[in-house]
Image (cartoon, rainbow, N blue to C red; front, side, top):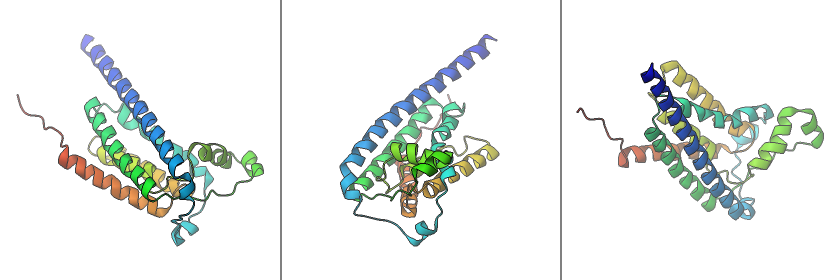
Length: 221
């Protein structure tokens, strides 16, 4: 019984440390994101990355719930007993490196997405449009679109959770992640090129981290 209680306390402690690490990293990267946004705000309105596919993509305000579920998406590695604190550090470092690449993209190619027009009447009568207009548009500025930090985060989490979950839980996790990536288009927060470029960055960063910062294999005693 003592052993079980000690194990439970150890797991609870590890989860708390992972949560604190996530919150610290999110706040730090969020501050940098905002600073970059302020720097590029005036220049971002001169560039549009709109394609014919972006034009035909419908605006679905209800998907704002999926868009914001990215924060719940983090709970899987935070709560999973298969993700050690050391491995969670690896996830955070990988995402931080990828974010540096996205910040560079924001600075070199500042762009903004034109906000969908939502009247005050519509916002008051529809909960989804209210969330988009009053919350999403307030929290997330219209610039800093290229590449999408949302998509970078989702792909890296999906890739680094591979073999850490059972087959079906992992498939459901990837399905959820795919919906989050699609929601960046349906809430009209990102262009298609933002998603594609973010995917390229995510895979390149994961490749480089695995190559130059390989995990130490466990050796037999």
